[in-house]
Length: 407
Image (tube, rainbow, N blue to C red; front, side, top):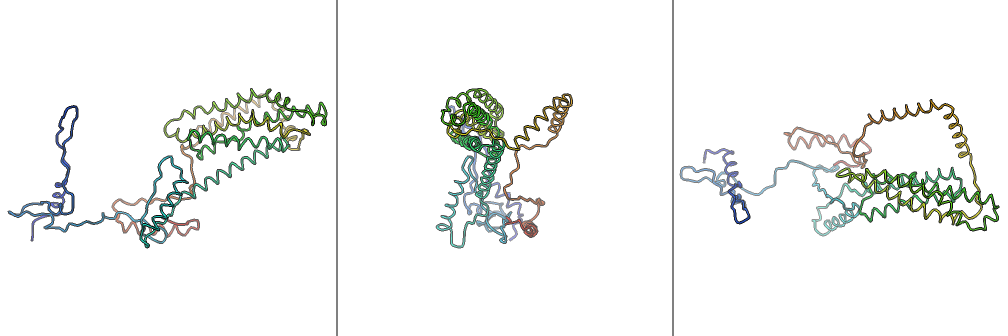
């Protein structure tokens, strides 16, 4: 039967039958209530009973000209993994502030439960991207850098002090200061991220320790030379150590306090930059506080325990050569004062000019071990053509040996 209808007539009839309309506002005491009409379509039968028009005296409903049924939404995309070009993808979003390791562990337990108890035998949830690999890689990198830093600093300290006991005292302050910073961060509830871990400067942490150990060692060596080694080995050294530490404690205290105060601008950061870089300032600040406390308490006690007998200053070829060349450089600088001053002024100007044109970015780059490639296609492209182009891209990317899988 020809009802003289177009698809547009059906579309407009369905749209007008399910619109929400606004009414007036009813004042009731000190409250105001908005009046509105809500669309009445609640089930499939309601759509079929919508009036399109009347043909003479006969009403023409949607069910007279169309079959109304439930169906899936039109497919607009497709996901593929590896050789399987059609899979269902799901993404788990972690809440801010949660521990990734704990969340992933619990998520694995839930996935195992779904696969074994809930889902059919022919349907399985298979994780293909797991942040555990990134977390483990990051922890390994940070641990490796920290260990290398401790070993390198210990080697340099040993070269110039040339005594394994003093080297041990100095090097042991690094992990203890780091532990103090971690404890304080945990108490305050701040995370220790990559930026904050990378901010730890072992040289800054050892400033006070090096001064105290050197002062104590020199004082003990002078005392041993003065009274004789045999008598020195049998005498109490606590008073001499206390006097040596007291002579430099004030300078060390103010030096480290100045370093901590220099972090105040970072403490004042707000919004995004505050969230990112505040842990950096707190980590370094707490580590410096820990270094200061250890320098004035732990280091003197360790000097008393380890530096008991046979304190003799030894000199190696590296430290002797460094000192001799340093004296030569000082004499040369003193002889040519103008050249030295003008040279440093020129160096500062060059550094300042280079800094003005030096590129920078707010967020540092992080290699997560994955590459994100995006191809922009016309908005009007159909699904079949986009799938074909995607398959072509997958084939070309699969030729690289480094590629493990392609999503």
